Image 1 (cartoon, rainbow, N blue to C red):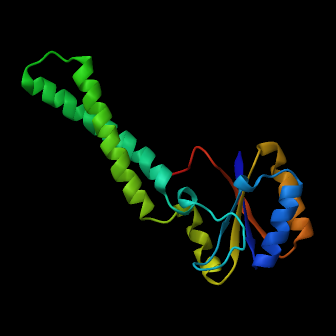
Image 2: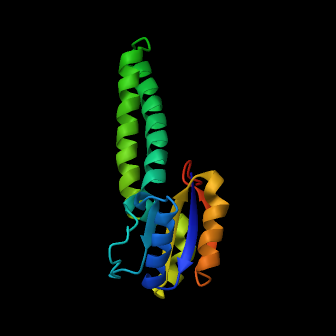
Image 3: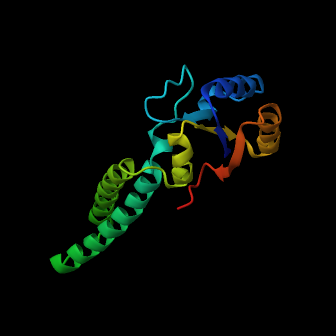
Length: 167
């Protein structure tokens, strides 16, 4: 799956595009709309927290950093305790570190906006809507042409992979 970005000037055109996408087999759960705060989306699928923020990438970084820290702490602790390195306690400390790291990373990520969407902030604040459409790779060009041909006022803004995220 890939995510296609379109900037759309108003809600009426956004509704038309969504209906056209639905008629072409794109499910509602694959269409996400970002708009200026307090803009009524009139039944459109608003982008969730995982899209609006860097929550998922921050959790992934937190797991890696917490797990590595847990490993180091476990090795140091076992060495100073005079025990032979045992798998159980070490694994427990690694899991605890990864858990704490993911929680801390997730909280930090929820407080920062999505770094991929920074370039669209000004347009969104001026009243445009950002439409994100998740489509299979083989349908990218078809969907792009469908939207830009029938709705010339919608601007194609690019394609990004959904996973893995680029840091």
